[in-house]
Length: 286
Image (cartoon, rainbow, N blue to C red):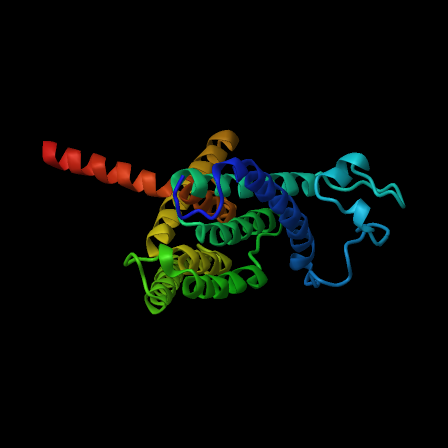
């Protein structure tokens, strides 16, 4: 365990449980965002309530994971069904927050990456859930993520090149990532529209990638586009094969970008290093 960590190994289980619980609580808030943002509603007011009868939920009916299970997926006031999505999002966020913590802890990465990667995790969950259902990526998600990425670069510049980076260098790298990733995909979207005479990429996808560039940098952004495109192509081919006809509808790209982002967080640098080793070996053998 790196000596820079401000706690001892015997406290690790407690920190892991804390990461899981934090993720479950954040997942409860993400559920509010997933429901309200596409409808143009505030995520702050009114407080959490039953979407069917409007019954305000007291704290003991709004406990992450537990309340849905205890109430058996129903409103205690009107008996209306509560979507299992609430339980799934809370559990998924809890597990992903824990996975981020373990990735940083076991990989020996600086702890400053935890809040940054948790922010990115929130971004990708919201993007996948909302885009999959409503075919939009709200600006209320991407613009704050861009701003927070720039702010976190100034607060925690340690993970930005050159290592160690000054605050100004980190801010410059974050801004460069936002411009290159967002601008590059914007050019691709404009070129696709001119070539195919229809929207090839949504501008929500462009803003999402700009946010990823601001939070992680241009190289992760390129990785996300590449693997997102590969995943999207695979999904499209699978849909064509299953229906045995030409694909006419657009593929929802946001979930593909979100999945590629998660792949980067969990194994991206290792995948890049393995690719470079393979490319070097093949080039030397040729």
